[in-house]
Image (cartoon, rainbow, N blue to C red; front, top):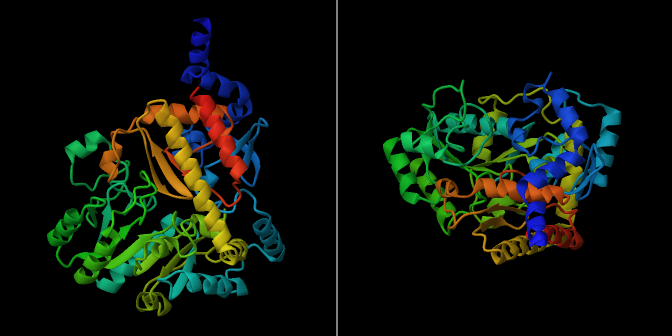
Length: 447
């Protein structure tokens, strides 16, 4: 009986938190110091949700990260997605070092601009032309501005639970609470205070054709674009049901609206051609960030010539002091050259290892009678403790978030770093041995 009580205590959240705190005093000290000068002590509000507090890291290599206290972690966060080749990939680091020695930014043209653009237009189905910016939030605004100019319409349609950056125009109905949805079931719902009115935003439900038809019918001739994550990575990695993306392609064409794929996460993660290649549906415009820069701040708008010409002719303003700077484009060229040159091997391994990890996690948790669902595709998936398979964002509200938080904390104590929202990312640096080590750590948490 004593051994049983001792075992239960070892794997309780309270004991796990105490264990992590005992190993990460350096992080706690730094976070307390940071809060005296940095708002919230973090550079992005989403990082505040880490338990027991935000960790501070000193360096990383491949699939591993090391914190300031010397603890090593198998990394499934990958900087929230950008590190497709792992942490500090040598080819990218070398390219950055070479570029930085020549100049950090010119505010003028250089060879890397067209060299990277040529690589992108060769592999992205919708990319007759591309343009560069620095963040996913920024490039989405370029896409929506372009759609308004092309259609002479002001409104756009987005899906509840989809994330397109933190600009006022798109940060609506991203993660509304059950209470908010009860009070305002049709949205759009602000995510925080200080946001501008949402008169230009129309909300529909993912995987629900009727809600899309209703949105267009209720706003006849007013919707310039429909924007979506082709795989809903930011909320459960919920895939489009069969035929849904084809339906979106068809209805936007009939309604005279542009179809925009937000491939900030799926781009160069689901394959060289992104989600549009993976699912076989070509949008009018697509936005990329994260993996395209391999850990550096780069974003890309790719689009069909008839729309991108509005930028070429100066009819739509696209500007930015640091756009296309040589350091990030050197990183992108190195990363893209690697991914394109060895695509079959890299993506074959990413999907194979992703499936092994997903299946292993699900099997272990279900053996312990946990109700859960794992969704996604190979190198990016989501785990939630829930009784049913989610079809859209509202279905996710029934999941047990506290249980997942406890699970993430236990894995952190075992040296496995995962994101607090249920997402898992794999990189080309993860090995079969890393996957097996991770599953062994999971087994220890579920003793």
